[in-house]
Length: 260
Ligand code: 13P
Image (cartoon, rainbow, N blue to C red):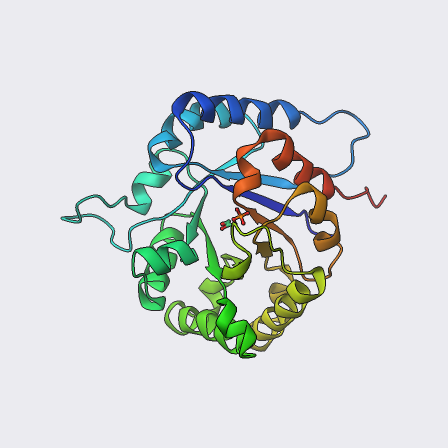
């Protein structure tokens, strides 16, 4: 059985003070008591300017730190960008790559995203690659074509073996910040198609181990119904990750019984 992975994408929200308070609540909750069920693994992705300070608090806990973006370049004259080596330096183990908001507002292409994926891996940072379709694409029955196209574009550049070191997040654009979650069946259908793609590219064991997260209006109230789906390995959470109770409620839904 895999641990579920619960990732909080704080996007461009909060202050130093509110970030420290939120992290404190998440860490306090994650001190396991004897007999506890197996907890999910948590990652928080705060705004870049708070990463270093928050790392001082979370580096003694089981919670991991992630960034929301990384430069595709190793270093140099790229004003405003942050290199993977710098993220590693301040304690990041994960980075979100290719979020639909960056594809839309910053013009990120599949090729740039693939280079960011490689830049992260080169520093032992796990990339969380986001893919997702628009409402128009879904209504035109293009969902699978779009999602597999976005994944294949990255696999073609990074190679299947390196791709397997990442995490995938399926985030339908129409479900992000809208309160409209994909139904568990809709999400599972896409996750199963992603798994089938992985199985066609990788040894079966490795393809099955790869984490495929769902994102888009995940809340404590709908998380359990998503997590029972066989190919949903966790969640990438936006709005609900800004409130400790809501975020940890999603984590509660991801707890699993000990099997022995
Ligand atoms: P919401 O959970 O606010 O819909 O955001 C999802 C998301 O974009 C996470 O990356």
